[in-house]
Image (tube, rainbow, N blue to C red):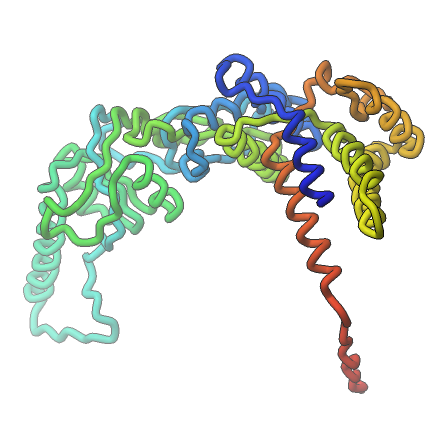
Length: 401
């Protein structure tokens, strides 16, 4: 009953700006900034909130974060991070190959391109003269050339392979004017196939059954001191890459985690655009309504409902405690504020007092709050249903002498 009441209390206070593009975007910005303000990115939270919002807006409502790729490059400051439309592969372009391709047709493959050696392990080939060795080598070269010709027959101008490409096939590709990229990491390949709308191929006998990937432009770009390959104008329009720069690996890892949090919250909010204020405000609203319900409920049930409202008040208390403030004082003030109509007060940890959450721009997604509320209630119910707990006898320690 209490959970239902708390949820309805939230539903009455929800704000939904889906229709108004400008307002909705500012809601998303606020949510992203609220998410990022407790993390390492808090100094540049506006900048990163904008990055996250732009990336999520490109998804156009899908919650598939696969198509947002995050690349970490040490060097520079966090402010040098940027959002790039398209896909960036962390590889260099080989020697003597075209550095820029327009209207690319991409074949993404996972196949061995290094058969200059006999690949039968433990096999011995006995020959009676050196000319025979040359024959074997020539046969292998011929085999390789056949394979390359088959690949070229797909009518592609970019070949991305998961495995090594030896010099000979690379030379053949370069002569045909095809950009060959070797040793692309597996994540990169899967995502590249997804984003360009192709499939990973491993046999090349029937070109018509292989799905090629497409993009408008492939070029080499520099980030820091590394060269990378940039695919722009990809088939999947919502794909983009966020390049994070930072002083050290640790900073980058932390920044990536923070940004991932923000992206998750935002992608959910784009689907369910209802927004609440933050800073302990929703919990106080719920606690107030649940308390009133407890007063009108007869019997023992009212004790349980009252306890539920006390549990909700724990959240603003914890927010105050974490900021090193006097939680008893602040929560009492907050409760008094909330008995006024249309109150928007919450805990403002920066000034250490009760602040107006609308002015501060502290927002949270309704979907997250609802999930927290319902899952906490379910967890509590599960624990209460446990009748007895059986403990195991502790293991005897053998004396290790």
